[in-house]
Amino acid sequence: MRIAINAADLDHQRIDGTRIYIWNMLKNFGPDADDRDQFLIYHKSEFNPELAFPVFENYKIFEKPFPFWWTQTRFAWEIFREKPDVLWMPMHSLPYLRSKKTKTVVTIHDLAFKLFPQFFQKKDLHRLNLFTDYAVQNADKLIAVSSSTKKDLLKIYPGLREEKIKVIYHGYDKELFNENILEEEIEKIKLRYGLRASRYVIYVGAIQPRKNIGVLVDAFRELRKNPKHKDLALVIAGDLGWLHAPILEKIKSTDGVIYMGKFKTKDLPALLRGTEVFVLPSLYEGFGLPAIEAMACGVPVIAADNSSLSEIVGESGLLYKPNNAAELTKTLREILEDSALKNHLKERSLERAKDFSWEKCARETLEWLKS
Image (cartoon, rainbow, N blue to C red):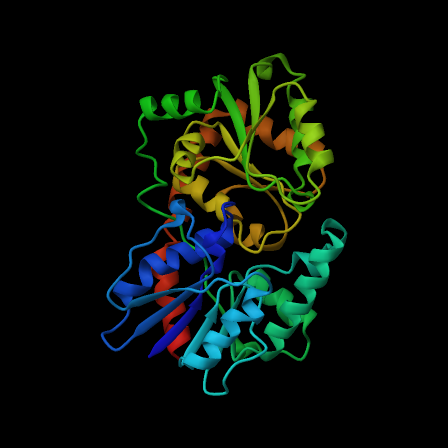
């Protein structure tokens, strides 16, 4: 079977969950395929070196530059001309121009822009709605990255057939994210990023309104009023997203909050392993990849009780009501001041992480593509 893949997202310098997902699928598809399978991988400029993947014998890479609307112009033409058996779009879009001989599968990561449109820029909102609506309604099959995302799809698109959607969970890189990280490595990475705090709580993700970082900052500010936690820092690790200005201002104006900014993926496990608690306060997540990566490092996890976070973190971490800074403060204090609870959550985190792997994700995705 000839499977075409839109891998243009791997050209971007900013690394997010979607790009980590595509990268790991390409690292695993080759070995999982049979001898008759061939993968046609398209992108438009130059791959981000941090997202380099092995090029197996059954991979053909096509670099096809074009200055605007690449997916709907140059890429669409190449796919129409090549007529692969299946086209996999690992993001919310689908070429309007394509051969009827080519079946299509689209991965839907989340529908936050439908549920929280106020947190998106108008130009992005229009594009997301236009392309996602078309992809959902016209793809032969869909992949949802969680049961929560599948539920949202069926609610927002009432005419959608449930059997068209398969839930396939993300995984994590077991070689990178694990508990076997030496103290020397943790200290070296902290020094590299100028992180001098001996104790810290960490958030990992983009700086944008949906991530609800302001509630975490408010909870942390209240926590630091207690003399026991005066030495505690809050580390915000992630690149700037859209509408970030007021969030960044709040971060930088709060004592004890350290904005670390962009980081290298290979350095993240040490930053996670060195933390007291990982917090994901988002109002909505399609999956919540950083939570699983933290769990794989044996870190206690706190997450907002909503969307996929309730499903993915579940009883393996502690959940709190979104937008309730007082409850988040209380939850943080419980973990920080109760060593037995902290150790229990570490064990539960490690156990939960075993349920996820990129190998399993790639195998299930390939089966769905070939079906």
